[in-house]
Image (tube, one colour):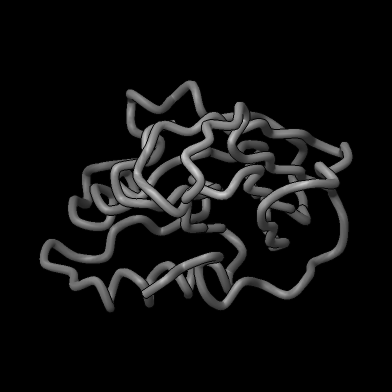
Amino acid sequence: MTDDSGFLALVDHHAYPGFVGANWTYDELLAHFRSAMAERSLLLWGTGREDVWTVDVVVDGLAPLAGFRRAIGAIHVTAGQLHLTNYESLTMAAQFNDVQLPEPHLQDLVFELPTGMYRCEVVQLEDPDDGQHAVPAFALTLTAGPAIEPWREPAWHEG
């Protein structure tokens, strides 16, 4: 997964309202992300640096015991699919009403799972500042279950 802005995301692209406006501001976009996280259609987290990341997605498994940092959030699967994406795709959808997620070049990052509410544990396995390139860099563990508290801010967001 490419990351030119320091953010990755897991999104229910069937429920996530991508378009914000042709001239959105960063504050408007962040408010849009907060709203989508409250609706449990988006989980957005900071990566610590721009890079190309490998992300493992595990359904109904165990999250890694070790890791640099972790966050747990809720996401609702409304149509049997989730999509791993980046900030660049989210901003394209935010600015252009005709851009639909997933963008064609990221179709291979859509995966299927049963409709329902999921607890998602995001684990960054290495400190992004130490120069290591762990493979995978992130582990996402999805477990079906009751709704938990939604994220109010992107995880590990510094700004």
